[in-house]
Every structure is written in structure tokens, then in C-alpha cells.
Length: 336
Image (cartoon, rainbow, N blue to C red; front, side, top):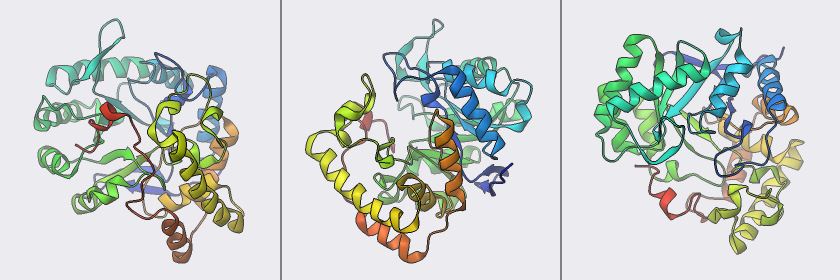
């Protein structure tokens, strides 16, 4: 069994491996497949292989499916729950018929409802890291965090986190109950949390950072040379980053990244993950294939010199326009 270095995520005591496994793509999603077709047997085998290699930090959400990702994880971890560290998220309101309502709900009553449902889906009596998936602008963050803090007292949740919030929200939340981690999109192609000073706030407050989509939603793999290469019904087809001339501009940048990867004898994806891990962050790349989880975990042993980091960051300096990561409505819900 390979041993991945363990790190403390934030300063509240949660210890995790230096890389996690994003579990959104392990299942299909309502309205279409997010990242191509998923096979349950292969998805479970991927989780098991990750554990064999020391990758026991799984990230999911009730949104994924909805509910399907949490339930698949329950099957994968059955009889071995305590070997895993499970993070899940709530906030996108889901009704009793498991349909998305179309709004974010961070009210105290919904927090309690959502956690019970996730515990049932995961077939566990505790969640290691419980995040608010998006900020509910109609509910004070203090109310949401107070309700999450009660879950900690009850033993249903060990640590709490937030996703896609800005510095002021982090400060308000952290004053109510210590926040262990922030989860937001971050990659060589998406560094807004850095530009907005959110990373500085995390450092100031002692909050860990869990970047999702650390491979630019798979773009950094180099498998997609034109927008039509994305699978049919794949939501990446409609993201601004992957439209028309912007796609071509980003492809040129990726080719420059590839030159450094070739020099180092690693894949572009491994280089991108090593860059994030070197900053002390815990990325959660998603995959549903064993070969990719093996490659991703191998990136934890890659060390980059300051010169290599500087060269990488010079290819896509802060402020470089690589295209919005969501459509207009989606962008209104991030970094709030």
C-alpha cells in the first residue's frame, strides 16, 4: 500500500491525505451526465483503489445525483466506514421527492433536514466534514453556521466547512464556530480566490483550502482538443471557458504547460496537481477510472522547484482571462 503524506486541514484537528477524490462524476446527474457516462461497478472499484493507495478522503454532495453519489459511496465503504474520511455538502434545496427546488437553502430547519438525509444516504452516523455548498443570500450565514455547530455538538458532524464564499462571509462564519475548510474552484486556469484575497483570509483564520476542479474540469488532461471532444450531454460544452476562440486560447496556454510537464517526465495533470499540493492545499480531482486515480495519487510525490513554479505561473499570470467558469446565473453564486 502506497503511503500518501498526511496533512492537517485547517487548524481544528482534521488530518487528511494531501489529495482527495471528487465523487461527483461517479454517478449520472439529473438532466444529463456531467462528465460522461458512469458505471457503478467501475466507480466503486475506483474508490477502493484510491483507498489501497492511501487516498481515503472522499468528497461528495447531496446535489450529485441528486443523492446518488452519497448512496454509491455507502455501497463502496460498507463494512469499512472508519477507514474513510467523508466530506459532503448541502444547500441546493432538494424536496422530499428528491427533485431540485431551484434555490439555495441555509435555514436552520433545512440544515437539520439535509444532514439526516445525508447520514441515511451514506449509511453512517457521522460525517467527517460537512459543507454549506453555496451561500443562501436570504439567510444570515450566522444562522446557518449556528445550526451546523449544533450538529458538531450532537456528534453527527466532526468538522464544518463552506464552499464558494468570500472573505467577509468567512470571517462572520468563523466567529460563530471554527471553520475547518473552504472548498472553491482553483487550478492553473482559475485563480479568482487568489485574486480576491480569499486565500489570504484563509491563512489569517487558519482555515484549510480544498480546491475542486483542480484539473480545470478535465481540460488540463489534454484529452480535449476541441469543444466537440466533450461527451454528448456533458455540461462542459456550455461553459464559457470552452467556447469558440476562448477554447483555442486556453489550448495554446495548455500546450505551454505541456512543455514543462514533458521536461519533467510527468503528465500535464500531474504537474497541475503537484503545483497545488506544493502550496499546501488539498485538491480533490474527480475521476471514475482506476488509471486516473493512480496517476493523480502519484502526483503527490512530485516536487517542483521555485523556478518550475515561477515558469508555470508565468504562463497564466494572475488576471489572465481564461473565461468564466459558469454561465451568468452560476457566477452570481460564487465568492459571496
